[in-house]
Length: 463
Image (cartoon, rainbow, N blue to C red; front, side):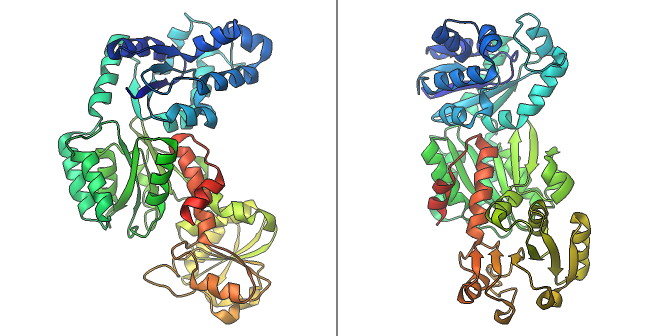
């Protein structure tokens, strides 16, 4: 039997429900907190009091790494999800069920089982603070969610078994979704895999779907990368293309198939925001664009990892004079990243009003497109789609490029764009869109699954 792992905050019922599932499945039940107490010969409160939380987390990590890999039901501690090493172990060949409950219910349950405080706040405020702090980690850990606020352990266990046996989506929802996927440009082998997952005779209801959402997006390398990572980390997931000119269709299908998440690309990075329940700070208050959507527990949360993918390769150029070409969603992420590195940024766009609007948001300069030659930048960042099929032109002429410049083209298909090719001929330092793709994809994978993939692993898979 595939391992079943329960995660969630204290007081959500992981132990009681886990025991019932184990009894039903006729397999052993393991509580990681009990394993820690057995391993140390001490109680959890004593470890916290005498050695502190850090020592407890170290022991917890050792216990998690030693757990059986199959034929077992596991209940974990409330903070286990915040450690990427734990998530790599717990997610492998497992189905993770996130249990939740409202604040009042958790408070009532915890007053009967006192534990050392994690903050100096009153109990209910501490619960709210810690759940909020861990929410991203809980959502990353969740394959399925069950709210235990108003259910008995027996009823909650029945809900879990229903999810494990049937999944979330109905037969009709999956059939409708398959027709949607058939209208896109999905390669035949990938389409067959989708058909098997959605409507096949031997369908595994615990297999989850993710994908890239855009129009066009058939050129995206994300499916190849993510499916390779699923194999590497033993995750029961499949990544595909959600290609359609209508974003509402994409979002409807994603929810119908209970998708785990979406990588959002052109032209939907700004349009997707109204479809979301929550947006993290960088995406909402600053960039105004989302490239990552995580679905969990009935909510859709938007993030932006583009700015991190742009910032990482440019750290050594902090304080440089930069020209940013473009004024769309990716350009907004680039502007945020460049300003975060204290650069002197000028935004150029074919439509000057768009350049001005973006510049005013981030406190940058702006200018008409033909002002490039007099700026003499140290760094040029291309955030336009020029260079990508079907428009394979360079945004700059060869004579505008000098050998002292660093050229960063955010287009990654093809890997060597006309702009990068000309810049290399001029002896420029060049950064390709692959660099951005690698770093932002690493952040996306962490948001989706809580696993921190080493950068060289992703780079090897995409180059």
